[in-house]
Image (cartoon, rainbow, N blue to C red):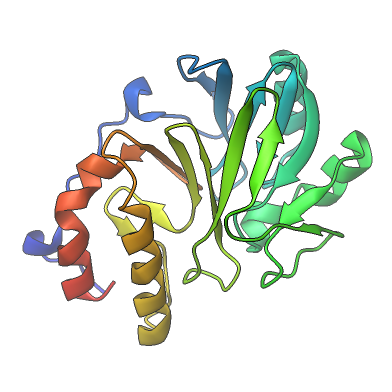
Length: 223
Protein backbone atom coordinates (compact mmCIF):
# COMPACT_ATOMS: atom_id res chain seq x y z
CA UNK A 1 0.00 0.00 0.00
CA UNK A 2 1.44 3.39 -0.96
CA UNK A 3 1.79 6.04 1.74
CA UNK A 4 0.06 9.36 1.04
CA UNK A 5 1.74 12.54 2.23
CA UNK A 6 -1.02 13.23 4.76
CA UNK A 7 -0.43 9.78 6.28
CA UNK A 8 3.30 10.21 6.81
CA UNK A 9 4.86 10.32 10.23
CA UNK A 10 8.15 12.23 10.40
CA UNK A 11 11.05 9.86 10.94
CA UNK A 12 14.05 10.60 13.18
CA UNK A 13 17.37 11.55 11.58
CA UNK A 14 19.97 8.84 11.11
CA UNK A 15 22.23 10.03 13.93
CA UNK A 16 23.69 8.61 17.11
CA UNK A 17 21.00 10.40 19.11
CA UNK A 18 18.53 7.95 17.58
CA UNK A 19 20.76 4.90 17.77
CA UNK A 20 21.87 4.76 14.15
CA UNK A 21 23.73 1.51 13.35
CA UNK A 22 24.14 -0.59 10.22
CA UNK A 23 25.18 -4.18 9.47
CA UNK A 24 28.94 -4.54 9.76
CA UNK A 25 29.23 -1.11 11.35
CA UNK A 26 30.28 -0.17 14.86
CA UNK A 27 28.07 -0.73 17.86
CA UNK A 28 26.35 2.18 19.58
CA UNK A 29 26.48 2.48 23.36
CA UNK A 30 23.90 4.71 24.99
CA UNK A 31 24.75 6.95 27.94
CA UNK A 32 24.75 4.93 31.16
CA UNK A 33 21.45 5.18 33.03
CA UNK A 34 21.20 4.31 36.70
CA UNK A 35 23.96 1.74 36.56
CA UNK A 36 22.57 0.16 33.37
CA UNK A 37 24.51 -0.06 30.12
CA UNK A 38 22.84 -0.66 26.74
CA UNK A 39 24.68 -1.50 23.52
CA UNK A 40 23.02 -1.69 20.08
CA UNK A 41 24.36 -3.14 16.85
CA UNK A 42 22.92 -4.40 13.57
CA UNK A 43 23.34 -7.85 12.06
CA UNK A 44 22.24 -9.85 9.05
CA UNK A 45 20.70 -9.12 5.68
CA UNK A 46 17.49 -7.82 7.29
CA UNK A 47 19.34 -5.13 9.28
CA UNK A 48 18.23 -6.58 12.62
CA UNK A 49 19.06 -4.74 15.80
CA UNK A 50 20.53 -6.74 18.66
CA UNK A 51 20.77 -5.16 22.11
CA UNK A 52 22.89 -5.98 25.13
CA UNK A 53 21.53 -4.77 28.48
CA UNK A 54 24.05 -4.94 31.34
CA UNK A 55 24.06 -4.17 35.04
CA UNK A 56 26.60 -5.10 37.72
CA UNK A 57 28.42 -7.50 35.43
CA UNK A 58 25.35 -9.39 34.22
CA UNK A 59 23.81 -9.00 30.76
CA UNK A 60 20.80 -9.94 28.66
CA UNK A 61 20.81 -10.31 24.89
CA UNK A 62 17.67 -8.97 23.22
CA UNK A 63 17.00 -11.13 20.12
CA UNK A 64 19.43 -13.75 18.90
CA UNK A 65 18.91 -12.54 15.36
CA UNK A 66 21.89 -13.40 13.14
CA UNK A 67 25.70 -13.44 12.99
CA UNK A 68 26.33 -15.26 16.28
CA UNK A 69 30.06 -14.57 16.04
CA UNK A 70 29.39 -10.82 15.96
CA UNK A 71 27.03 -11.07 18.92
CA UNK A 72 29.58 -13.06 20.94
CA UNK A 73 32.28 -10.53 20.02
CA UNK A 74 30.15 -7.67 21.32
CA UNK A 75 29.41 -9.62 24.51
CA UNK A 76 33.16 -10.09 25.04
CA UNK A 77 33.76 -6.40 24.40
CA UNK A 78 31.07 -5.50 26.93
CA UNK A 79 32.81 -7.60 29.54
CA UNK A 80 29.63 -8.89 31.18
CA UNK A 81 28.26 -12.37 31.86
CA UNK A 82 25.19 -13.19 29.78
CA UNK A 83 22.47 -14.71 31.96
CA UNK A 84 19.73 -15.11 29.32
CA UNK A 85 18.54 -14.25 25.83
CA UNK A 86 15.13 -12.57 25.66
CA UNK A 87 13.15 -12.86 22.44
CA UNK A 88 10.75 -10.22 21.17
CA UNK A 89 9.12 -12.70 18.76
CA UNK A 90 9.81 -15.78 16.65
CA UNK A 91 10.25 -14.55 13.07
CA UNK A 92 13.24 -16.17 11.40
CA UNK A 93 15.25 -12.96 11.10
CA UNK A 94 15.13 -12.58 14.89
CA UNK A 95 16.03 -16.17 15.76
CA UNK A 96 18.73 -17.29 13.33
CA UNK A 97 21.61 -17.07 15.83
CA UNK A 98 19.80 -18.68 18.76
CA UNK A 99 21.09 -22.23 18.40
CA UNK A 100 24.73 -21.11 18.15
CA UNK A 101 24.38 -18.66 21.05
CA UNK A 102 22.78 -21.25 23.32
CA UNK A 103 25.54 -23.71 22.52
CA UNK A 104 28.27 -21.14 23.19
CA UNK A 105 26.81 -19.41 26.25
CA UNK A 106 24.78 -22.20 27.89
CA UNK A 107 22.03 -19.75 28.86
CA UNK A 108 18.22 -19.96 28.69
CA UNK A 109 16.12 -18.34 25.99
CA UNK A 110 13.09 -16.53 27.41
CA UNK A 111 10.04 -16.17 25.16
CA UNK A 112 6.26 -15.92 25.32
CA UNK A 113 4.51 -19.32 25.03
CA UNK A 114 2.40 -18.17 22.05
CA UNK A 115 5.52 -17.96 19.82
CA UNK A 116 7.27 -21.24 19.09
CA UNK A 117 11.05 -20.88 18.90
CA UNK A 118 13.66 -23.00 17.09
CA UNK A 119 15.34 -23.81 20.42
CA UNK A 120 14.10 -24.88 23.82
CA UNK A 121 12.77 -21.91 25.79
CA UNK A 122 11.77 -20.88 29.26
CA UNK A 123 8.43 -19.11 29.23
CA UNK A 124 8.08 -15.48 30.16
CA UNK A 125 4.66 -14.02 30.85
CA UNK A 126 3.18 -10.55 30.69
CA UNK A 127 4.16 -8.49 33.72
CA UNK A 128 7.06 -10.71 34.72
CA UNK A 129 10.03 -8.84 36.17
CA UNK A 130 13.46 -10.16 35.23
CA UNK A 131 16.28 -9.41 37.66
CA UNK A 132 19.46 -8.12 36.01
CA UNK A 133 22.12 -6.93 38.40
CA UNK A 134 20.69 -3.92 40.21
CA UNK A 135 17.88 -3.31 37.68
CA UNK A 136 14.66 -5.02 36.69
CA UNK A 137 13.46 -5.67 33.15
CA UNK A 138 9.69 -5.72 32.77
CA UNK A 139 8.23 -8.13 30.20
CA UNK A 140 5.17 -6.85 28.33
CA UNK A 141 3.06 -9.08 26.08
CA UNK A 142 2.22 -6.97 23.00
CA UNK A 143 0.55 -9.26 20.43
CA UNK A 144 -0.34 -8.28 16.89
CA UNK A 145 2.82 -8.63 14.84
CA UNK A 146 2.90 -12.20 16.17
CA UNK A 147 0.74 -13.84 18.83
CA UNK A 148 3.63 -13.93 21.29
CA UNK A 149 5.30 -10.61 20.58
CA UNK A 150 6.99 -9.15 23.65
CA UNK A 151 8.46 -5.80 24.57
CA UNK A 152 10.95 -5.35 27.39
CA UNK A 153 11.15 -2.22 29.54
CA UNK A 154 14.37 -1.47 31.42
CA UNK A 155 14.21 1.86 33.22
CA UNK A 156 13.07 4.33 30.58
CA UNK A 157 14.31 2.16 27.70
CA UNK A 158 11.72 0.11 25.79
CA UNK A 159 12.91 -2.68 23.51
CA UNK A 160 9.92 -2.95 21.20
CA UNK A 161 10.87 -5.69 18.72
CA UNK A 162 8.63 -5.37 15.66
CA UNK A 163 5.66 -4.01 17.62
CA UNK A 164 6.50 -0.29 17.46
CA UNK A 165 8.75 1.63 15.07
CA UNK A 166 9.28 5.27 14.25
CA UNK A 167 6.25 5.94 12.08
CA UNK A 168 3.88 3.25 13.26
CA UNK A 169 3.16 -0.31 14.30
CA UNK A 170 4.82 -3.42 12.94
CA UNK A 171 3.50 -5.32 9.95
CA UNK A 172 0.20 -7.16 10.35
CA UNK A 173 -0.05 -8.31 6.71
CA UNK A 174 -3.26 -6.38 6.07
CA UNK A 175 -5.16 -8.51 8.58
CA UNK A 176 -7.73 -6.28 10.28
CA UNK A 177 -7.98 -8.39 13.42
CA UNK A 178 -4.21 -8.40 13.86
CA UNK A 179 -4.08 -4.67 13.22
CA UNK A 180 -6.70 -4.01 15.89
CA UNK A 181 -4.72 -6.26 18.22
CA UNK A 182 -1.43 -4.46 17.65
CA UNK A 183 -3.13 -1.10 18.15
CA UNK A 184 -4.44 -2.33 21.51
CA UNK A 185 -0.85 -3.24 22.33
CA UNK A 186 0.27 0.24 21.29
CA UNK A 187 -2.42 1.83 23.44
CA UNK A 188 -0.79 0.10 26.36
CA UNK A 189 2.72 1.19 25.38
CA UNK A 190 1.57 4.78 24.97
CA UNK A 191 0.70 4.83 28.65
CA UNK A 192 4.47 5.09 29.21
CA UNK A 193 6.05 8.53 29.77
CA UNK A 194 6.96 10.66 26.77
CA UNK A 195 10.68 10.38 27.52
CA UNK A 196 10.66 6.58 27.12
CA UNK A 197 13.18 5.63 24.45
CA UNK A 198 11.82 3.11 21.95
CA UNK A 199 14.46 0.81 20.46
CA UNK A 200 12.89 -1.43 17.78
CA UNK A 201 13.98 -4.62 16.08
CA UNK A 202 15.12 -2.76 12.96
CA UNK A 203 16.28 0.75 12.24
CA UNK A 204 16.32 3.93 14.28
CA UNK A 205 15.12 4.62 17.78
CA UNK A 206 12.36 7.04 18.67
CA UNK A 207 10.56 8.11 21.85
CA UNK A 208 7.00 7.65 23.04
CA UNK A 209 6.56 11.42 23.05
CA UNK A 210 7.78 11.78 19.47
CA UNK A 211 5.29 9.20 18.19
CA UNK A 212 2.33 9.97 20.44
CA UNK A 213 0.79 12.69 18.20
CA UNK A 214 0.42 10.18 15.34
CA UNK A 215 -1.24 7.31 17.18
CA UNK A 216 -4.74 8.15 15.94
CA UNK A 217 -3.44 8.76 12.40
CA UNK A 218 -2.13 5.19 12.37
CA UNK A 219 -5.41 3.86 13.67
CA UNK A 220 -7.36 5.76 11.00
CA UNK A 221 -5.14 4.79 8.08
CA UNK A 222 -5.38 1.12 9.11
CA UNK A 223 -1.71 0.10 8.88
